[in-house]
Amino acid sequence: MFSEEPEGLKKKIKALIAFRVIFITLFFAITFFFWGFRKFPYHNQFLYLIIGVYAATIVYSILYGKIKNLRYFAYTQLVIDIIFETILIYFTGGIESWYSFTLIITILASSIVLDKKAGFVIATQSSIFYGSLLNLQFYGIIPVKTEYPVEVTEYLYKIFIHVSFFYITAYLSGYLSSRLETTEKKLEEKDFDIKDLEFFNQEIIESLPSGLCTTDIRGRTIIFNKAAERITGIDRKNIIGRKIDDVLPSFKFPFKEGRRDEVFDTGNQKKIIGLTISPFRGLAGDQKGFIVVFQDLTKIKQLEAEIQRKEQLATIGELSSSIAHEIRNPLASLKGSIQMLKEGTFPESHREKLMGIALTEMDRLNRIVTDFLIYSRPSPLNRDNVNICALLDTTIEILKNSASENKVLINRQYSNHIEIVADSGKLQQVFLNLGLNAVEAMPDGGELTVAVSDKNDTIEIDFKDTGTGIEEKNLKKIFYPFFTTKEQGTGLGLAIAYRIIEEHKGAINLETVHGSGTTFKIILPKKNEEKQG
Image (spheres, rainbow, N blue to C red):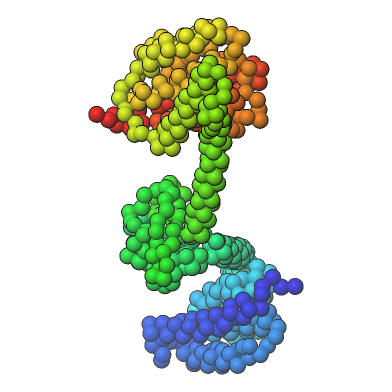
């Protein structure tokens, strides 16, 4: 089985025929140019050889493409070449001929056209023909004129040196040819792999559901996939090679890395496009351009808006229900008291008691409405430099009466002067609410620890009690408006506190173990906005 594919061998045989014509033409043209046709001693023989070689070439050209056994065809041409070259050497002096090098050219051609083995076969054929010619010349069997008498040692030397060079040429050319063939195969495999990988990458790029666009460092578009065409409504032919913001003004160049949403007008509709821009870097780390990945977020944004609207309606419904529930109880008490007062069929002392109940319930209604207004329509923050430690001291002084009644010990764990930019009035409202909740959570006494930690850009304020803790089922609702476990509570205190901390760009977290106490942790940035005058 031959290692060469027929198509490849066919091309090489075609090249061999063409090379033979070119070489013979140049070779004889140069010879006659320097000698002149009549002055050249072998002009008639050369003329016959030229005619013979051209005739053979015509035959090869006719047979080319018709012979199925390409290797046999190649071997036949090479052997005929050796015969012509041996005749040339015979006509030009045999042992004294300058043209023995032509046999080496044929050996080289055999290794290139066929393989390493063919090189050694043609080298052997050349050795046999050349050695036979010199032997026939030495024994005088064929008449060959020599300018000087030739000794036996010279014949032997010529035969030995030529045969040696024939085989050395066959080995070296065969080695180089096999290496070249191996290299070509590897390159073909690599080329196939590269094309396959390129096709695979192209398939991936075209199959992406997201729009993909790449640009060079100047913003000229290089890749624009099918999804990008679908989202933007722009054919890639109209954007490839052009500056991206000339065609897509929403993709403003120079790019800013990161994620953002843009409104894109396709002409028929406006779309919300989510862009992610990142640098495109080479293996050396140098920036070669930009990669833009984008999606059509129009439907998603519409769904989000619809969900948000439904959530708002659900929240309004829940708040309405909670408000109605909170207002109904004091209204029922008021109605009952007023009806009894209207009847007037009870003693004076009982009348005063009913009036007190009515006033108390009116105050309760007023407190519910006031707290709800504070929660639903918060006033703007009045920011200024606030000493948190001093503000906590004031809060603790206010809490002392309630703490002493419940036998609660307040422990302060702060001493440094820590300033932040905040609204002192609203923060004190938060501190009072958390402090009162902690005191009320310890009806049988306990300890309230107020601690402050400085964390460079933020501060942490802890209100830790040793009370009854919060049941796990209530943890998710603790900051909901109107949620309370107290009989007289409005359920807005913690909701307002949460809102105030959010307004300060902070956070309020809760840690509790039922029966072992609760810790409210407030995290506030030291500076989050410019101080208001």
